[in-house]
Length: 457
Image 1 (cartoon, rainbow, N blue to C red):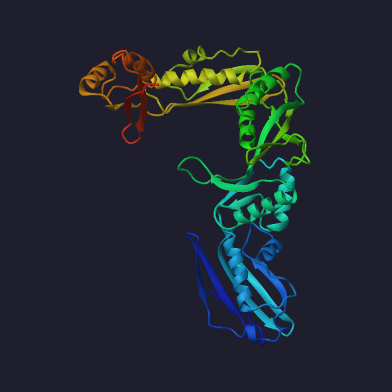
Image 2 (cartoon, rainbow, N blue to C red; image 1 turned 30 degrees about the vertical axis):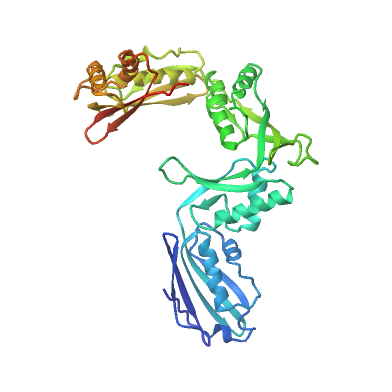
């Protein structure tokens, strides 16, 4: 890939960097005379960036490490390209340059990588997220709240965060990891502080009504012991405990702001009286405040069904306990829909899904439409017993009433296991684990039951 603008008296070279599987290959032209030019002609007078849609030119120029007005060499241009490549932000990098008596101009031609994930700051309680992002941006020009899945930029962010701890006399060490679901893609890069134990003290609320405040306090008490702080745990508290307080009362658009944290001081014994030594670690206690915006309370206008064929709507309606004209309690509705899903599972629809679609009208309430996707019917496949002798296996297999090819009942296993336990020798303490596998290709369900005897205490 060569770029050859016409320029009298000028010499131009191009290098192409291609990144694949995080390996760098370089195609280089023949040696140049750049290093032998007078210093005045090697003075960097312009850096131009093309191709990148994610980053502004000044940020890329800063990330290259090149300084305007400095004298450049071929080796320094190579290093600048490698710096950009090492960040992981670009899948392809090429540069070309031209020079004259006025100095040297460099142009970088870039292709942005597409693999980016958000950054999470789990427990940097001494700084706001805005402070963290601003400080990182000052030292890592390409940082914009997201990071490439691979490359050195994640390390650069870690170094900045570590420097912030040192400057604040915070005795912690920054760690990070790429996180995601098991066997799934990377979803985020999470930064944490080790060697400092941070515990949650009081959890308070602003904007909450007197009627909801006691329930919020009770829900906040469910923050898991030993109440060690992490942003993810606070997010789970909001989703699993706090929001349901409002959803159960019909406040379907209630919003909790980001947690506001308050510490007594930096985590060292001389500046923070609430910091105590815990072995090699330091401990601090923080108070958390959530700002709540309840929004409007919605009452149920009507509830209807769509997509259901196996069961008529009037039969499903009897399983829902919401009342027309009363607050739209979506917590109760979700529990009722779980019961409906069990009903579908008993008919072999083990992949059936139910989703409530709320249609809001601020003047006369909310209409709920339950969208049903029944999916295919699954049948009984293989049944395996492990950890038992042949006689016990035969006895337990005979007690299993769903035969191969029968429609599979997703709730049957819960009925079967207590009954099957009565067939085992009562003198031993039995443990059983079950593995149920749905086979998409032939719509069958395999059940694997693994029995073992617990060791005596």
